[in-house]
Image (cartoon, rainbow, N blue to C red; front, top):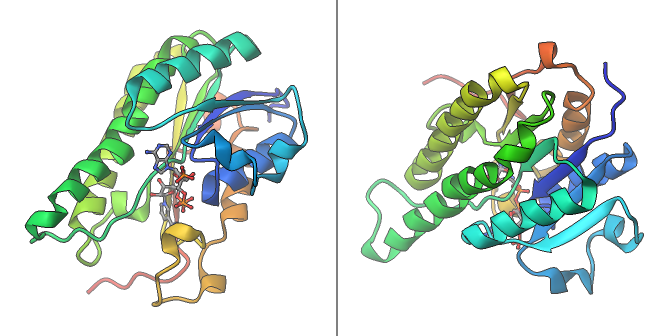
Length: 241
Ligand SMILES: NC(=O)c1ccc[n+]([C@@H]2O[C@H](COP(=O)([O-])OP(=O)(O)OC[C@H]3O[C@@H](n4cnc5c(N)ncnc54)[C@H](OP(=O)(O)O)[C@@H]3O)[C@@H](O)[C@H]2O)c1
């Protein structure tokens, strides 16, 4: 078990799973740097951890579709904290694009690819030189059970998450000798805005985002020799057909 405090760059922390991970990380004493599409959203903040002005929290503009914002965010975080040893990817979008999509849905496929796959890829690349100078870094990625199996008709989302899982395997390969370890977290439904329209399961029966914050907290305590690569989380039994 490690008691080291980390310097964490986290996307998607405005709400949902990312926000819970960020709040727990602050409670645990880590430094966090969060990238937001709309920094103005802090005015009416849903983010209690940001209202406690703290030297341990850094905020930058970031859009997963904008490479320049990723590069700047990484650089500014390095300047602020002196190092980046943890990168947590929580930004993501969900769309119900089916296999036989309508013409007007074609752009949804591009959006899924840009935000769910290229976003983490570009941000990992932007942080790479910092992550690989510590010999003890972590990359934690909110993939999904949709990156493990295809259930239903979510062709666009599922294809993006399988691609993301492939990317994570490659990050692990390329970072291993430099002490970088990757964990993918793969839930079914989590009770956030992303799952707000799901009716097949009650909100209280879904995985709760705070519990994913606890899992990430535990991963950050573990040594290089004990980092799980895949954490699959089911809130209900997935029956094989
Ligand atoms: N909820 C589930 O059931 C579930 C299950 C499995 C996996 N996941 C995955 O877990 C991750 C987090 O999901 P969530 O449930 O927390 O969803 P959420 O509540 O909808 O939050 C999504 C986050 O992603 C950010 N984001 C979206 N597009 C972005 C962009 N272009 N640039 C930067 N940030 C962007 C949002 O920021 P804004 O505030 O700017 O919109 C928000 O912070 C996603 O990758 C999702 O696919 C979720």
